[in-house]
Length: 362
Image 1: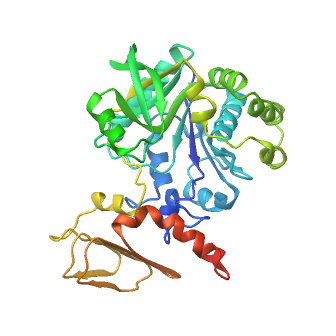
Image 2: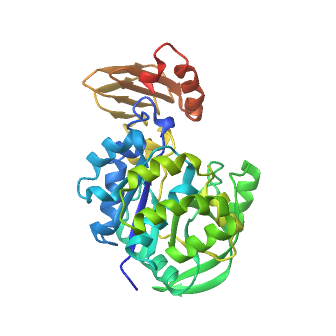
């Protein structure tokens, strides 16, 4: 098997972590959990899987400068900026084209930039097994996360019969992908034991991806051809991306390829995982006081419980006599909301956007 490749997708907005997260510096560029930005932590994890020359990051033009600053260990040419966001199917097609120019039969992992994983040893072992499976046959391998609760914010993967074993790890055929379910349906998924969370981690070969694009997303496949040609002729990529990218269909890789393909298999993960999707998720990664309060920065809670208080820039934030609040202070914006409303921050930002000069806070 040839050397594996890693492609990290780092283009999300991270709106649920506003006001710390902004368009030019979203969640994956922040040390939401740990001392390094989540993207830097992701790169640290995959160094055991591939040499630096085979690790790529696909980001957005607005984030390119900050991403380069967080990825100084990688070759500068391995940071690729999409001129406009066209969702994950376009990013996967671009990733396959980039890897294919290096190795036409290369096997690549496509990974999110903003997940929290502490057990690096188990993570490496699982990815190695997934690479072995993808190299062994023309399959699309996805990593399934064993659910710990009937979450309604994740997509699910239903597994079928065992397909094979790699590094003593079972790999199963995928029966279907399902979108974010209602609570009662998620409870049924959890009880059945047949479903895993879809974490957006995929491993496949360049020929498998390109065949799937041609078969299931021919419009996208055709639009990607000038990019493949430019890479094959070793032409600068920025110009062709600027011309081609706005024409690409905007669709997720799940809809475009995975849900339509019959050669998808799943390897259940053995590592811990958290997508840290909103502010309340931060709390479980930090030590709290006796009342369950988590404080970061210069922050104090008096006569309150289960609060998250975050302060930047040496500004003292004090909270008195309240429970279950999120309080986040940055140099130019402050958020105060109940934990139960953390998923509504996106709606709040729509109102911020229409304020006079609102874009400076986004």
